Each structure stands twice: as structure tokens, then as C-alpha cells.
Length: 128
Image (cartoon, rainbow, N blue to C red; front, side, top):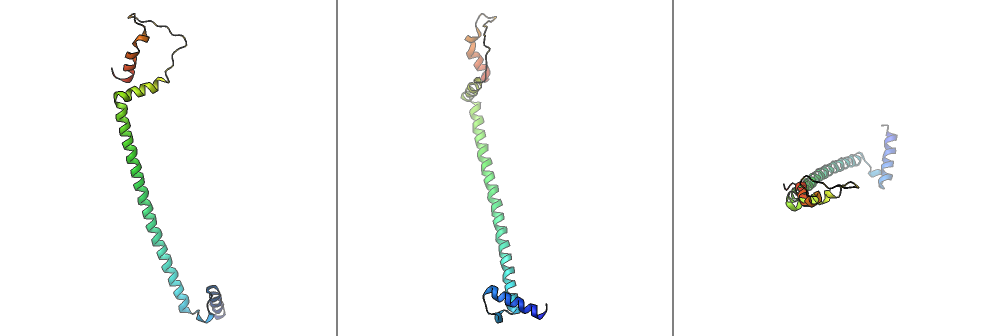
């Protein structure tokens, strides 16, 4: 750089930092670059540590959610496998059973089907 341009940059730096133009030397400016480099290095280090912590915590959170969901499904399946659970499923499913508007009851055994509802419910629940 030409000397006039260097002096202009030093004056600009002195104005920017609010110091005397005579104290802005090459050593001073080189020191600023060192501080900037150290600051950038520290910033990058802190960001890398934060990213690593974020990833670890996110993975731990996902693992906890998966564990809770797994335990919930195990308990739900155990419950639904019990006689009470089968009855509950049959009860909830019965909401969707639709009979015809006109019902005709006949049986080769002479017993109307309506009287065998318990047997139908047990078959539906898988008890028989």
C-alpha cells in the first residue's frame, strides 16, 4: 500500500476505536488481528461444544420418548389381551355393528339368535 493510503487507514482506525492516531502502529493493528483470530477460534469452539451438547440431549430425549412409548404399548397390549380388555374392544367395536332395519329371527335349533347374544359376544371376544 502507498504510504498515504496507510496513513488514511490508520486515521480511520483511530477514529473508529476512539484513540489517538499516533498510537495506531503496525504492532497495534497486528495485535487486533490476533485478538480477532482468538475470538473467532473461541467462538467456533463454543459453537462446536453447543452443537455436540444439543445433539446428545436430542438423542437422549428421543430415547426417553421411545422408551415411554414402548412401555405404554406393552401395557396396552397386556391390558387388551386380558378378558376385560377383550370385552372393552368388543364393546367399542359393537358401536360399528349395524343390523338391518328389518330383522328376521330363525334358527335351525329353534332358539332365536337374540337369545344367544352371550355366545356371540364370547366368540367375538375370542373366548371360544
